[in-house]
Image (cartoon, rainbow, N blue to C red; front, side, top):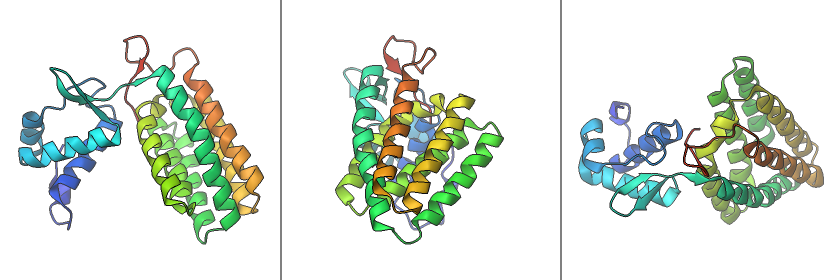
Length: 232
């Protein structure tokens, strides 16, 4: 892990550390439940403890880390039941975002969604689960960002960040990737044609099936019974 890539950019060091740690957590290293030791991370990254401490607090605010008694801050875990609840909420919120985008016909959105799905097709062809998860997240983020409702976008972003703790492991299944891509194509078709009802229905169906995949045998758990591990 290195921060040299940020050396020449006009960005706060804390923000750079936060982004680096966030990406590491969503890649599964450090693992769920692992302590985020400020001294160790500061030494590893070659930055001040203050910058790391601020970044870790941001991760807590993101829902990617949590404070535990006598252990300090650790990488968050997500319970199976909690994941189901989040998907129930996402179904409503992201269905509305897709509807709003179809109604508004936002300039440039269709082209950006098409580009995300082109990259997703490539990830599927390469049997790349992480690439699939990244492009899925990109598609959802585009709809949230362009829906015209900043409060709705903020809620979706927070929930999606938490769900990234589990979604990549679901994305490891080739059949899930194939079905997910077809579902997003239907969302795109509805937005392209300006059909709000179809856009909302297609997005809700996509999230409903993903929620069902979390209940299937072999769904991601971290070995403690009802808590899911971190991957994205």
